[in-house]
Image (cartoon, rainbow, N blue to C red; front, side, top):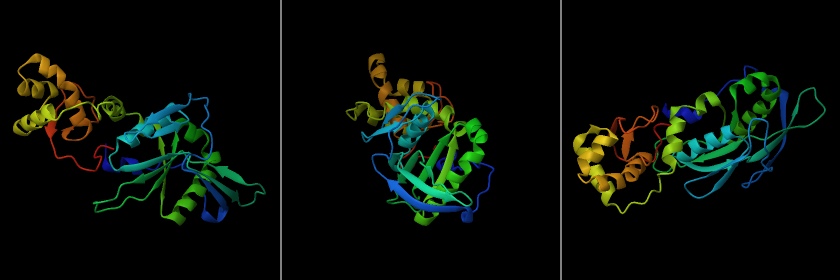
Length: 256
């Protein structure tokens, strides 16, 4: 998946000019501005990040996206239902409200290019098309707010979220804190550096002659892949026959 995956914007095909939107005020909270409710698509869900923070999601699709965000090593903070924008549309007397799904802030230390915070809306593609007229004004208000704060606003759909990469992320997330004394990981890294390219099965067999130790090291190997100490093509389903290689860990999620 390309590096700019988190920057993808899905157009609603409805153009709203800035002059049609007037921002009234913004209500914000780090704990979320509203209680997360179930919807007709699915029940509410929760994602616990690597840092131990609980993120409440309104749907399974939002949960999938939150897991992708948490797997991105450059993501510093994820806020669910972070703010509500009150705005008016030209020609209407009433006030409208729009609450984006996530506010994401990035770690920019030691990076050549800083990433601005991004407000995200998560939608199924068919719902986005079906309700594009209704959604367009809220999206325009969000873009107007983001422009004033030097943020970005992005809409992501199931087409971009639910890929083989997501399945690999779901598998690997649990291994990021897999117990390791450092012995197995050091041996695996030394072996893959010598081999250059291998498969998980080949690397384990090359590193450990004893079958018991080989089995004990499987979780450590997945941890090294999850933490990017060992490279792999995460856009293809990970198996014991997948191609893997040695690489230096960096604060950058190259596959998201």
